[in-house]
Length: 370
Image 1: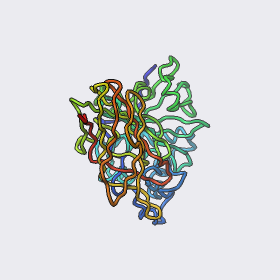
Image 2: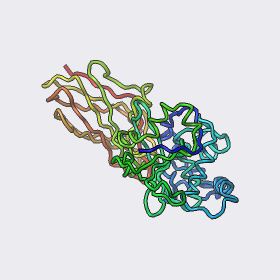
Image 3: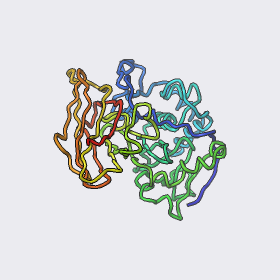
Image 4: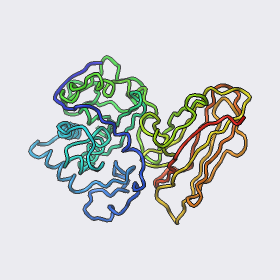
């Protein structure tokens, strides 16, 4: 794989991890009643639809200003121009995660940079989606944009204004590799180059930056792929009956990615629990402690269903299903018998959008019944 530098910028990667996960206000549709929108938050063509984030006419004006006097550009060239614009921003957290705040305050991180690039591209009729790359590097993650250009998906990283291509001499309509191609290792082919359209952001922290722009993140991130309520992400999570027997709400974050909720939100979360240091033949309990139920409630339906599935190492005892009610949020105790020292339990739900529905958690813990 070759590296080619053009002109770029960044100080330090600030994790945009929290931008993918719900809050009490994620389904606020009041902003969608305004007529000043290019694409409403629930428009199927809006790449920011997983967050109910509308694309405003303000962003249309920003896009047109970036492209003004640049002549007749190809879709790829427009995306490069948008990334060059974002490349001058500082890295940090804006007052909110909207594209407008990112532009007006000229600050953001991988999640907000990706949202802004997708919004700018959408104003030019370029369809796109968010690619989330979880748990890589260790206790971190990344976000990039995948855009439909030249009849195929193509990955662009606005944080480093970068992309992978196997047509290095074509700057007008190059073949830019997709997430699927990068996932299977095509970024390591000898004929593929990583194009970095700028050095400043990369050079301020090159050792850290290599983890985000290199091919390993596309091959090793777990979970990884296009986000949305229709695409379940199975988050690998871990508890040890002796050393790490609980995860509380103050433990939620990059070290325990995905643990804070289950359900269909910006990312559709499943939990895949790996439970270790068990004694074969003993009985244990995995307890899920809920906090609140959120999402788009139709007909005031606020119940939430979960199912436990034993994947390996043991047997479930008792009921494998639980229905939570917002009026009575009692803990769910999943009882099982270990056949091995390691057990895997998958926690899943039946919600796949377009409406959002999720349950936020207070705590998850394991205990030896005896």
